[in-house]
Image (cartoon, rainbow, N blue to C red):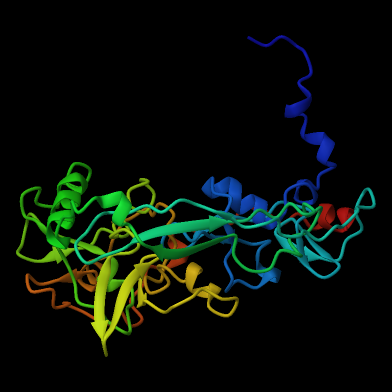
Length: 331
């Protein structure tokens, strides 16, 4: 029922037509993906966010379109988004800009999937609140989350499952939301590949319509269900060095995340070159399904996707209509 009372939190005029001064590009990505670790896609040039902002998170594959960044969002030095373009435009009210600073790291507890010959995993996080950024995304460089393996003997108490048992149980769970998977067909771990370091950490499930095994990386991306083995899972051994899954990548036991390697955290899904937003056509093209499939022995059906990809234009829309007189008046 309309009470006729003015609700201040719904009054958009308080932003003076520049809500991007209140919500930075990163914050817009956080709201879209409901994830504090979300960021503007590192590969996107800031000058293009006014047309279509691309967002990534270390917890999902690929990238997402958020649509045009809000009017008032900083897009280049001294420029803001307005009407879908990056313009040099004076603001209605002078703004204070304060670059952010990282708070201390907070270490999480050791967790484990209790898989044979594997380890546990930990996650540590930090927040950009020392000080919080004001009207800018500058100041907090690097990732807000890091991953590492840990000893899990006290967690598993010698009760461990094989990697096939773990995969098969997960595949049965996946089949409840993906009928194309055989609930009794089992699951497997594919061999490690240097060119696709996620392979040994992805769970492959038997398809109901064939003898091939498929990893539903794309279908489960937005369902809160991980298609990967837990971090700490043994995925490869080479030259007396064990490799374990760390953030869904099969990496040497000696690997340590550093500033130079932090880009790896956001690279997940970059090999599948299309946005993860809902598409108007079939969600996964046949070529990509083949790329994400192996035979019953774990041999990949395709190792290089090449130039095959969905056209992002199928998803994109033009949210603006050009009105030259109005544009000249507002600039």
